[in-house]
Length: 64
Image (cartoon, rainbow, N blue to C red; front, side, top):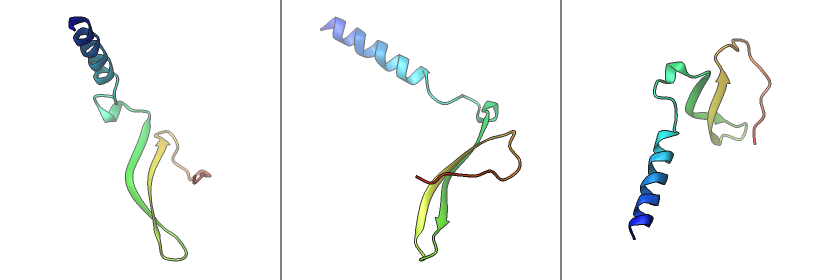
């Protein structure tokens, strides 16, 4: 039983330590969460936009 508890604790610490960067300003990407895109027929699609900080001009995109 103790070995299962130790294994669980080890897995828990590994998953929590490897998350998002502590400071979002250090990230290489600009992330826009919960962006609504309105379609031609009036419906809205919820999206997340991720792009590199170095890209300033519009680029082609893929919607999937």
